Length: 154
Image 1: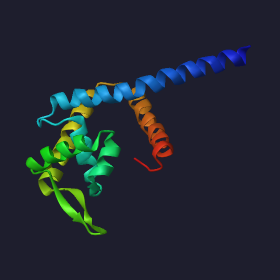
Image 2: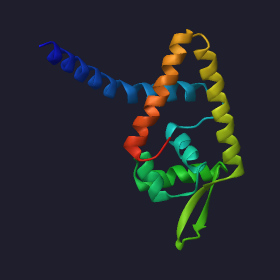
Image 3: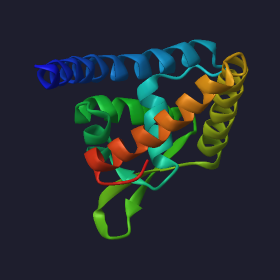
Image 4: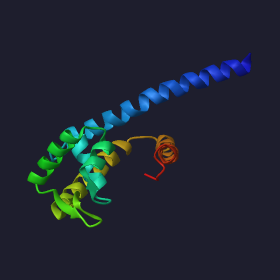
């Protein structure tokens, strides 16, 4: 009976965490972007972050961001108009186009990351040492979970 109660509580906790985690991550992103000095959407930020690692095809970006190809094409067009990305021929397939980060896009992303770290540092500085330790441990746990879900380290 006691084991059954623990299993039920664990299942309830897992359900609560599974629902709350993406919601909280989304809220954290929105809270930061509302304060950022640069007007940028979460999806635009995600695309810039992805492109900071390597150039991507439009179809890959659409799949990564969970949006349609026409939607990601419009987003890439906006980023290109801002001078943050450029289209280039895929050296592996001359018929395909890659989207790459420009120097200006890289500088913008660097600036946004710095602003994010500053905001988070300021807010977290008010936390107790124990809470900071819990957050650090949570990051390690999330990294392991993400690696299992995506097959790659964050």
